[in-house]
Length: 375
Image 1 (cartoon, one colour):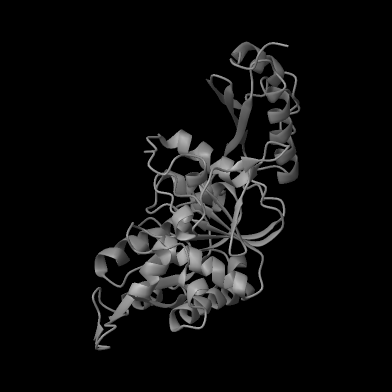
Image 2 (image 1 turned 90 degrees about the horizontal axis):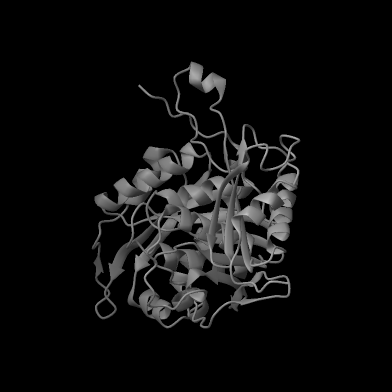
């Protein structure tokens, strides 16, 4: 057997010509499902395109796994990533009415063993999204749920610092990535795969592939919730996640100031366009109370996120204060929900977690999204 140091595209295409497509009834190659092949030494990435309405997701996942298995068996191949992409036609009724349909996206393949996936997002950076995500996850854990957290911020991963977890990720005998564990959470982050000071100078397709790998090649096990700390903004990475897995809903984090609220509104509209329910908005850094004189100062204003939630017609999950203790516990890897579980800040995060559960139980995830019309 040849040494595994260089993959051969001709051999890969030959393997793809021998795998039957469950969509077209022909081979992957003959049916045109192979959208692209990328080879970097012994690492291979294959994009499979699914046109039209997505077929049975179980069959698609089986196809993805089988394709990876066949290619990995080839000489010169050590690592394989198979990414599914697809385009859904705009609904005829929406087109006839001149309405904006949800953008084309990937077939939403479920993650085996995971009950609900919740995205924690913000329209801009610097609003405390990651701190909110990790304390929300820990609060859900405290309410008796089995919880994992995925740091999907490829360019600026922070979970390793927020949860005090170090070391490179390991793989099991099936070459699946093993998540780290902290305070009862299962944790995965790009920070476990590259050195902390490495600059991730990646273009969109590489970010998409990395997010898919963090989602689908990690041994998550059985979870009630997977909390996903999204990258800030409303770009390609956010759409990749929103359109590739069935998100139960999104939590939007914002500060009260007008500039942050503008971006938070964009985040709400993005999720609505891809038909993801909004579970609610959290107002972070809501108010500051001086630890010495107890004087209350509204550094970024106050109540803006609650007013914006009412304007947008989404729920308001609560206020988190701007407090030195939250910053200090985050920096030391012991989030406030763990470090001061009986304090008022931990109680505020538990209230947010309960609000998320209430929103899910109310059936908000089953309601049709608002129609966005072009005038």
